[in-house]
Amino acid sequence: MSATEITQQEEAKITFEIHEKYRQQEKIINEEFKIWKKSVPLLYNFIYTSVTQWPNLSADWLTSVKQNGQLFTVQFVVGSNSSSDEDYLALYQIDLPLSVTTTSAEQTVDKEDIKKAIEQDSKSNKFQLVHKWPHPGEINKLAFNSDNLVATVTKTGSILVFDINNVSSSKPKFTLNFHKQEGFALQWNPSNNQQLVTGANDGKIAVWDLSKNTTAPVQEFSPHSSSVNEVSWNSEYNFLIGSASDDRSFQIHDLRSGETIIKVDDAHNGDVNAIKFHPVLGDLLVTAGQDTLVKVWSLSKLLSPADEPSKNDESTNDEIQEERDQAIRYLHGHFNSVTQVDFNPENPNYLISSSCLDKRVMVWNLANLDEDFEEDEAEKNPEYNDPALIFIHGGHTSSLSEARWHPTLHDVILSCGEDNLLEVWQPLLPREEDSSEEDEKIDENEQDEVTEDKEMKDV
Image (cartoon, rainbow, N blue to C red; front, side, top):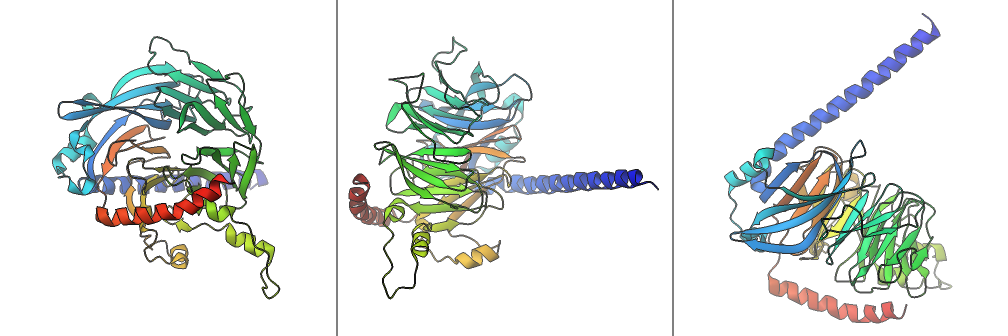
């Protein structure tokens, strides 16, 4: 037998093993999905699904909600990822029951209705396509603001801004050219609908003001040595922007000085995929990484100066700096790279995280961070339950692209992925503590924030 024949046999064996491993993975995924479908009536107040022609890489809710009899009509936008040049920005709407405004634990679940919802076919689908705008290639990321503008990031790095009220035009209202490579990072300023921040694989961050200039950014940063995966605008301290990168760092940039004021190297053991500021408490932010972890951080802790070690202290400056850069808490639950995080605007204690590879959306309650938790045990034992983890959504069968909370409706979530599925769902979440106890906690936090506010504004 010749060496060539041996090589061909080895290649055939490797190819067979790869296909067999893939087949086994698909079998496991399908079995898990079947189990999930059987559990749906016990886990959700409602869930609606739709299969689209192409996979969807990004989605976002519109803020408007219209009441129509016993239903709410809500809208959302999604961006396609086709295998041809047929990509588009699509606007959908769906009718939801009025019960979405009540607390999850107070609702009465109709199991038969949920079964019908999850098993509905395309002919009886509640999802209605309102309009499509052609798009030059896949939509890596999109974001909506309350002025009915939708910004998208293209595969070339250009930023397109569409006016979704203008269905008579197929062209974007603005085209913003700056980045030299494709990107996935985009967010509108939560306090100014004319401003947005973008990031791309060229390692650059651009701040745009549509009321002043659409030919060039009003401010730019080049802080990272690799791709910028996500950017986040601080709602409380509106002069701060965060960025997450493949260079394993996340950074905080001050728009007033144009300087990077915080850089946390090796924030994760791998790429830092996501970053998000808390929508109310400007001191709090979360990051997510390739190491399967979600981490909670405090800006005031990161900004505190590293004290010089005393003569009797054996600690070095590097050790003090490392201690300062430690996260407040690690959130354990995902089994693969975590690609996205999103706070619930209606209840900011709730956070969702999603992983494209473990195909799960996880709901966390940050009010549970003070409960007993063994970090070492969580790292060693994958079966260990994090008390902050309160729900796992398993409704996708392929890579999960994005999950977003509705901005006003109670615990309503939109998710999309490479399995061509659009899903709108409301999980049955455990009842929170008595509201009076929660108010006391909030009052205590607000008192703690007074000192932090002064520190932040003096930065």
